Length: 165
Image (cartoon, rainbow, N blue to C red; front, side, top):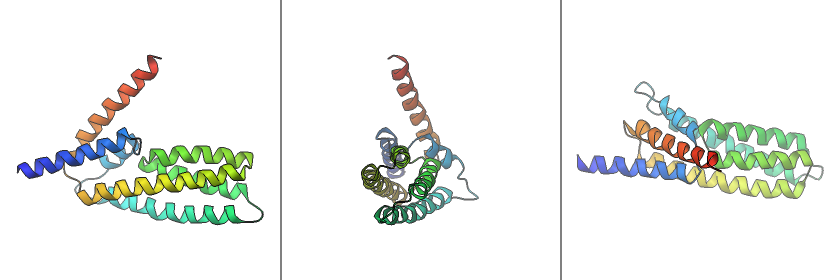
């Protein structure tokens, strides 16, 4: 029994680390809250769809930026979709890069767009690796509540820091 408790603690610690490093936000907790006994793989399934969709979008973005005549409206639409899907699973760092990416699309700044594509690919790769590690370790009952409480405490500390400025 001690090994299960120790494994649960490691899993919670790893998840909290993902929040503290800005990889995930509270939306990931919300996603976990939707998982129950009737659909125990819900989070893994949703995140897997995010992976598939993101890889398709990143490929389309790379191709679009290589064109002789760059279609910034099309690029912006792809980035908007990536921003929305990353937001829906709580992939905070991917979402933040997408915001800057969209600004460069609006400015029709090819260098800025290429730089952001590189950044979003890197952030996507990092969050994918982190989430795959999390899922490989497994999800245990009770994890959601403990992580939610720790993440809420972290969010409150951040808010207090902003208010103290």
